[in-house]
Amino acid sequence: MLDFLYLALGAYLLGSIPFAFLLVKAFAGKDIRQEGSGNVGAMNSFGVTGSKVLGVVVMLLDAFKGVAAVLLAVQYFGDEDAIKQTATFFAVLGHCYPIWLKFHGGRGLATAAGACLLFVPSLVVAWGIVWVLAWFYSKKLHFCNISATFCVMLIEPIFLPVNYYLFLVLLVGLVLLRHRDVMKEAFKGG
Image (cartoon, rainbow, N blue to C red):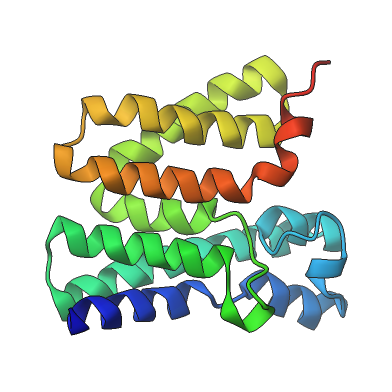
């Protein structure tokens, strides 16, 4: 039980490093929570600063948080699926609700993708395929993100062992919860 608490807390703290907040503050002198969509993530970093480079750097750093959480969890707690799943979920939770920013974070996609690439890459591939198809249909970024995230919960159980189902539902649920503020706009006609 103590190992679980250390794993969860470590992954949460790693995921909670607010790269978007820190970089936008450092390079633009702005509080990303008060600008644009208010989201502390890569897309709003680009929107607030106008810098594609900064947006990409934030996305890569956020993805790296997920990678680092899984790699450290495996190093210190073992290579079991449950350990990787726990590290992934809590890293994404930390990104979405960072203690350092009064629990006001990002939407978790990059952090989830980085972590999942290490041990369940089919989830990221399926997400990417659905995202591209949704883009051809709508050309709306949030629509694509939400649709792809929801669809992996329907697609992936075909390919994954049963011990991934709860993880999948929790991870997708967390990411969709963080998208609730843009859902109405994403699915608006026209």
